[in-house]
Image 1: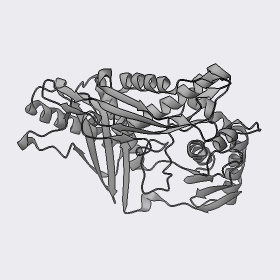
Image 2 (image 1 turned 60 degrees about the horizontal axis):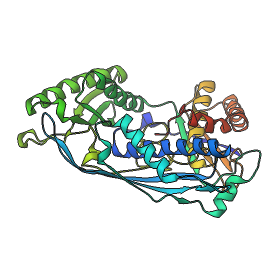
Image 3 (image 1 turned 90 degrees about the vertical axis):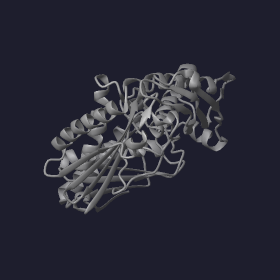
Image 4 (image 1 turned 135 degrees about the horizontal axis):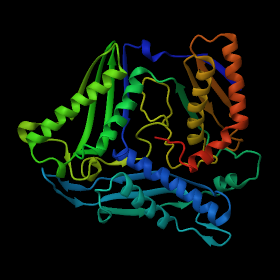
Length: 388
């Protein structure tokens, strides 16, 4: 069933909040490892059995280690601990799939790419991934025209982004792009945007890498220069707004306390991480919007609607907006055991739609469910879609 509803225009709100956690943030690290593990398991299952077997590894936690950062270079003291949990298929036709080995290798490889300064001897890991429950495993293996949902859940998407949403997304990526020339910038970058009417306040937490900062004086100089560059970039995105930028507001220079790290991430000492506590599938945290709290990272991409429907809702929103020019939001809800191509309800929220807009939206939803939804799995395996 397709239902139409009113659209809430966020730009008309007096206050708007938007947040993004960068790749090096502990929550994003947890999401990244879980999602890479999801891909690794799916590919292993295909190689060994010719098909994807049941799994969901969206329960993962990072426990911060400890470190002693110093200007010019400090040291790590205690390892970061990774706890893997969730469910996956360990045995198939008498074949053993070594889940622990796959999980550990995935985490090591991911850290080597995203946080290379955290050496692997400072990683401790434990796997508690268990065999999937009988009922869900059976659901996964039933032969049908479309996979059967292995959860009762919903997905939410919207399009287009507000100026603030677009700015927060762009600014985090802009700071990351500077890392090639500015070696002191770590990958742990968080951006919080707050709009109050026509005023915008952008607060950034950026982990500085200690070996590339010689002194407190240099730290403060680099921070000031970076703040100016971010403000210049932000103004190109937020024309018509009075914009201010703040970086590392927790610093207390008079006490010599600043955001300095050995690896470029607070996971080395200051902050734990868990799957699902960071960005939604659009890369943002948007409390002024309708949004799902599902942890998409790590869920299987074949039948888990907590992942698939959030991606589908975003893609549908973009398609409907492109076809109608109207701001739009989409929600899909499933029932466990039912084909994922037949959600219980699809809600389309549009801003001041005409009759032809509703007709076009309904047509797009039907075509998407029939022809495009099942392509999401392959796109995820090819890493063409990000979920955080």
